Length: 190
Ligand code: AMP
Image (tube, rainbow, N blue to C red; front, side, top):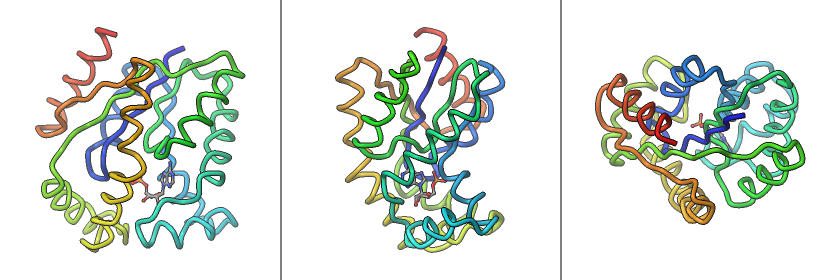
């Protein structure tokens, strides 16, 4: 089984690249952001809980997120592997994921961070916000808060996965195709 984690600040292109990787490597793509948005759209209890955090650009509490992620993995028992997009975002999520996968005799194969400058990402997100309807993409202060959350809580995961020899990063600036090429070259060398 091959399981990848895609890191990167909001707007770095995780979702776009995951869509290519899932086809190329026959993986199931799990985006916790998409799962939360699905729950919000369907007005579930989980959606109501997540909405206030997401609207502010804050992270949703760990346990809620971990439970949702684990349920989604369990819904795909036939999977050849997973691409985790937007998860883990904190050390406790990363530790929970390791424990959860170990129980299933699975593990993380590698993690890849898509690197890009904040100013480029803000411009991308504001542009995306015009068509996506995502309110968290339409307000620069919310976007900057999401970056702050990333810097404080997610960036330390670099050390966590470096400690396991599983951290990689690539330049996330360029055309979609160029970045896909960088990613697949890296993955094929693993
Ligand atoms: P994304 O679509 O990955 O940019 O996520 C959108 C929002 O969903 C984030 O700003 C958080 O509020 C929430 N979210 C997504 N994934 C997580 C996670 N792993 N932990 C906590 N909150 C998350």
